[in-house]
Amino acid sequence: MKTKPIKIRIAIFALVATAFSILTSCETNLELVQSINEQFEEVNSIEIESSFLDVSYIGSPTMESVQLIGALESSRAGNYSIEYKLVQHKLIIEVERNGNGGGNHRGYINLTGPELMNIDLDAGSGTVQISQVNAEEFELDGGSGNFELTDISAPILDLQLSSGRINAYNLVGDVDLEISSGNANISNLEGNINAIGSSGKFTFKMIKGLVNCSLNSGNGVLTGIQEIGKLKISSGNFNVNESYFGADTRLEGSSGNFNIQTESNLNDFNFDLKTSSGNIRVGESTSSGTLRIDNGSPYTVSGEVSSGNIKIRN
Image (cartoon, rainbow, N blue to C red; front, side):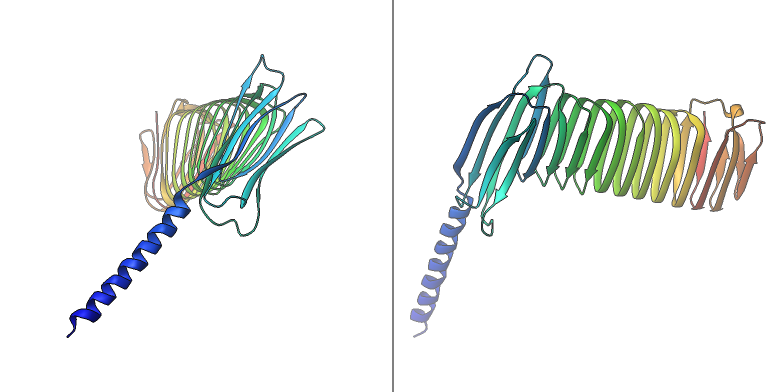
């Protein structure tokens, strides 16, 4: 007597599952809704709001025009479009949302052009690759995703990231870096770094300049730093190797550790270091509270940690 209702329920479930599968398939099946192949002359600046698109710019010293190749795929045609225009000498590219913007989407903006180019990029998510650029202004504001920068020169490289990863190599100029959460790797830089992070990891290598770095929580790994400035951490660790002290070296931590291997002669600096709960070591000198060493130097390495350790050695 109960067989028929059970069969009916099974049939209804099968119909619902089939309908859901069809709807899901419709959402995930992407079709090409826009394709771009354009060339622009006399461009000296590029401004991009890329949303979810992948973006690349490759500069060349032999190119005079900018080549734009792009594509947009969507499961709901008409919800997004790539808009672009040339205003005086600035190429402006942006993703425009129409309606509620639902569905699945993907696409890319690939640019090649002159090496001399100002870049202002606001990226939501996706992959960003920029290389071979000599700019007067360089600004990158990223939401989440992966960002790779190589062979870039600018007076100031302004890098901001909500979450994700930045890999930057062979840079010339001062770097202003701010990350909410994520990782930043910078190597082979001729310039200074001012870095601020809420959480995550900073890895800086072969920096020919002054490095100031502040992390709320996370870890900092510094190698081959020409001059250590102010290192500050609320919770986490700084590991420093093959680096040099300077006139403004200062260590600050609420709960964390500083492990520093320096190439500087320890006798060339005074030391004024304190910890409320932890240990301090400078060379062969140790203390569990305050360590002051007067070497008669005009420069003093200072530091204070509430809970943690400071270790400095050659």
